[in-house]
Length: 289
Length: 313
Image (cartoon, rainbow over all chains, first blue to last red; front, side):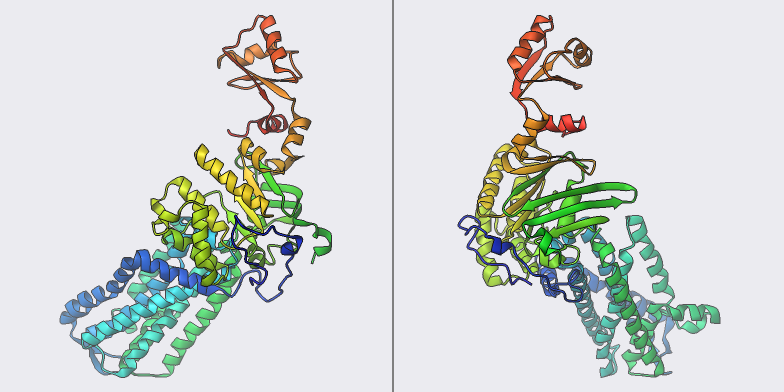
């Protein structure tokens, strides 16, 4: 990629450029217009920026599901008592909603990073504008940003799982698998979110994203089982991605695996695939106007 | 590859067009830039200069026409073309979340350059931009001029062969402008091709070997600054001010003096070979301007002639 960048000692003491310096030959790799195999530079930039300025915002993201768990799980849970767990055994209300809250937090983090954050860096901070005037292609930027979102999601999931452990809500080592499963959920939402952001032009349109997310959070069997709904609504909820994430983590948290587990995982694998195809096809619209 | 046609030019644009909806930001322009030339796009805001720059960088897709940068199409080989490009955008887009020196190093990493090269290079560029003491400062603590210099230093991190400068000195004080011009001269001496947009005629006259005057997405004229002045204006210009109310009414009484008359809201311009002689004729008609000035023609006059409007609205 940089084979022709002959190093000179500097602008002041440079050897004058010759015709030879101006000659380059084309690569014809697949995606060479969009990708320079350098997403790691975008990732390194993100880590450095986090270290120097916005680590406080990062920490605050960790507390959100923890606060929900304490207020709803412990507070409301005192009134509710035990409920029926995924395997039919009784579990505390806190243990019932904790994996759901983890799924919600994976969704929220990934959606925020791939929509609002991308929208802001694109249109206001002009960060991508600078990046895209280098050897980086839009696919490098997209891969780098999604990776950063997933890394952050993995850190939150690890922290939340540790809190669950400290609150005595973990009874099986299987529960540790909630961390990679959270990353899978985050990947599903992040890969889609960036593609959707490419259609957004204004802040008002961005607000529609919240309009979709909030009901999904409240009604995806997060706080009570799906069986309270009539059949038609159940089907509708089951078509939405968050329900699959909630059920997947809930099953993992108690180590109960059924054929439904495979369906939940498959749902996310398909979602990631479609999301990545969508995002890649929209990269020019998103980044190259 | 279109190499055979465009070998002698590092940039070759043919019928380049960019539409936003119905609006033609760039309307069928063609130009060639040989290696090492300093080439300018002169025009008012909204003329399509920045859009042209963005298409050269491969970050904006053209609607039609062809474009070749060092023999490659920037839309097909964006990353590879941009490896040899340095870009100074119209608005500074420094990374506010990183410190001054890190801005250079991280930007260099985007080109895939190794740290062993970038660390000494960053220090050298900070020296070049006179920002060595600010290496560890936050970007938002820098003055406008410092940010501009840092943006320019950043554009040099990959030792570009083509440097795109979009309004490089807008918002800089006169001293900072002259420092910057000096730096650009040195780059030009080292063989770097400069592509510059500006709406300052003095900047275009100082820096450009050759330029195109653009307006409303079209090229109005092309040539060296002196050539353009010779072809589209007279040697001297007499500027007269009669007060804002009277300028246009007096214009009628000035008919016949000089080669051409240009009444503007704030002054009347008389294009002539001999400004002093024209001024005497004005006085002999019994007209007494509040102020009068004889000066040499500039690119501003060329632009006025070609478009009927001044450069800075």
